[in-house]
Length: 362
Image 1 (cartoon, rainbow, N blue to C red):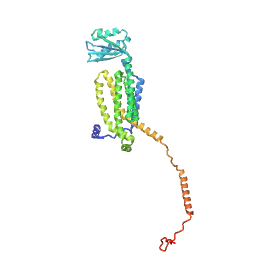
Image 2: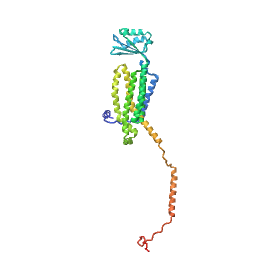
Image 3: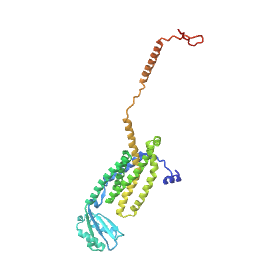
């Protein structure tokens, strides 16, 4: 493909001719590898939950002198406290998230050491204990709401399009969530309530892209001439080629702001942006390479079941053909003999010119 043709495809002036459905096994193999790595990461590394889920303490104070995260970590190392340190507003505010301070031994001593390093009084160090119930309650409500939303979305897609499309969309969603969670576990990033929000946002974007593709498939399959010429699989492939650049451009528009947050945002924004970036990219991939191919597989199985359910027609076997031919010959011979045995009618008298003789009147 020339550069001009590629630019025309990208701008939507030309429809590409990519054989996406024909090579669906390659996409399934690639997704299977990603899912296997994700499950291994979840099983081996697990998730690194924040204090919102496991409980801990949050320490906030405003230092009078400039401090670095390494200097603050030196004080916490004396008490063997793993912590997440953030310098807000260029170091004007220090935020420390760590385990419960009851395990640090002398809590007052730790507060005094931090205040002494920051050149402030111990009363200016604000310590807040965080219980695990808050994050767990948020996660429980989010999962409950997610299940209800997915149920209603599946019902809507089945009503608006067909149930096979709803099944394909749900398979793509499970694919996206599994890979996103697995990559999150593999890199060891902290799971926060923002991560849960990011995953919910990912599902909405993935469904939006899938519904756009399904709508084009439904529009094309309603053309009887197009379906008769290309077949169902060919129509799905054509629909993907007609919408693939729209999906790519939409995904790029969403990914670029998320990438800026991932590169230049704070630690909390980076965790949120990382989950969003992986999820949006995987969601765009699954809408094209998972949801549509799965739809063709489900449709092919429906067609096979429909053919198997049809009543079988009686077909004459080659062995019965000679017997049938012999019976036909015997019947024809009998009919000929019967016609030969019938008495022939007497010929009518004719005159010299060969015309029938006229009867005399009495």
